Image 1 (tube, rainbow, N blue to C red):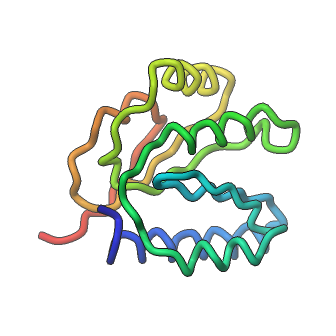
Image 2: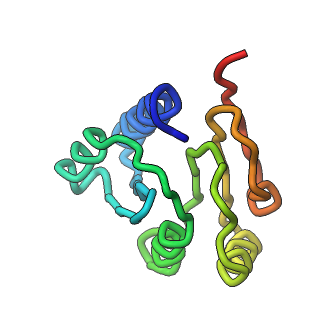
Length: 140
């Protein structure tokens, strides 16, 4: 559901975030997800980042593996105070109850969860787990 224009928008925004992170000498971590989650520390692993931009959306998305990576990063010393920005159409089934509890836990600890919904797909109930979800509407 993210292929085509939504995917191009997400990739363009990711490139812009990378430029901002470079200018500000900030860390930026990308977790690409569909069937599998692929974590990439973008300032350290340019080859993996280039591979990410060469790939196309594959569908069959599950947030569970991606959130497992997010939680591992938040538990690490290096990214423990990071905020999360999730680009998606949010047409993804909710994760497990345990993972939803983890999101709530991290939000209570001060982690902000932001979403950027790209497209007009119906949401699946993610809104209550995010501090804010902004939207880019595509089409009429």
